[in-house]
Image 1 (spheres, each protein chain N blue to C red):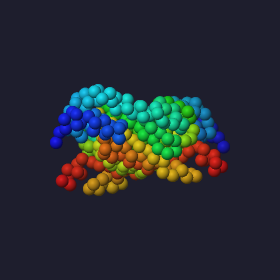
Image 2: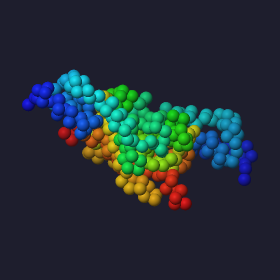
Image 3: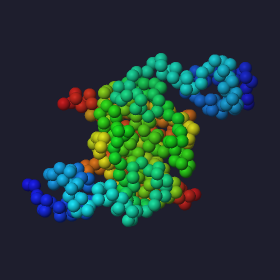
Image 4: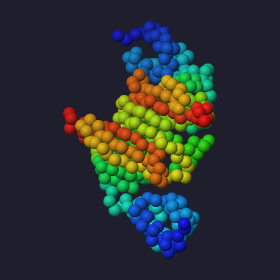
Length: 189
Length: 189
């Protein structure tokens, strides 16, 4: 069942409030209307596009990255609490895919996740010691990957970080990263 | 104890014959002479430099890569027998390292290994499904990483590939890759 504009717009607003990272494409599919309709709805309600919304969330709250200069992060950090969690987004472009089939190459998906595992560490130096990773489904050119890092355990030797990467709501990558950090090493010595 | 040139040169020749990938720097350390001395020794004996020697080995024998265009491989393939083994080299340059400490970033070391795991597969399509990876020691700018792939098992669902990457003789990375391949999938259906 399709809604009228008057029925749709408040629901759309509520949906975006709950999930500020949702794309116009996903909203169009959800509400069974065209992407153009979603854009017009947003314009009428003065809701910025997803990238602006994400930056907005980011500027409000996130910690500065310590373990590496922010411009060396693969993907764009949109949320971060050091030693707790972090989120980054990466748009899959031509340079990230195999020329034959436009499927994103594994090392780019890994680079985003690995970068985020480094960035979440509250230390001047963090390096990946070990990772157990799974590529859950193929990612194609034009898709946006949202990586979420969660610090599970800060041990004396290693810090464990879980990364899950999604396209829309579907899991495309997951990895358990075991990170070496400078400070912990110094404390041990 | 240092050898005279006359004593050193035959030993040097023999050593290079056994390990064509050895660098002048490693030979200099081994024979306790300067890199310049090794270069002069090679010139006198008409032994090409390591990169030329590697290409020479390569041109003699290696299979063409099937799973991706060769220019999409990260690193340079120097030896390959499809579904058996593969070797690639990658020189760590400024663009591969953290600006702060000149340590190679994990995703570049991973990219070389992952690429090689794809390249060794005798199929038109190969994708990484799972990987269990360890970074064994830091790699610095200017170092050359030699990655070696060995196909351990070709199962109906996955092909297992072991990758070990070295700088000189020391292990810097190892990973067990579980690869999806198109042909095997078709056979199953």
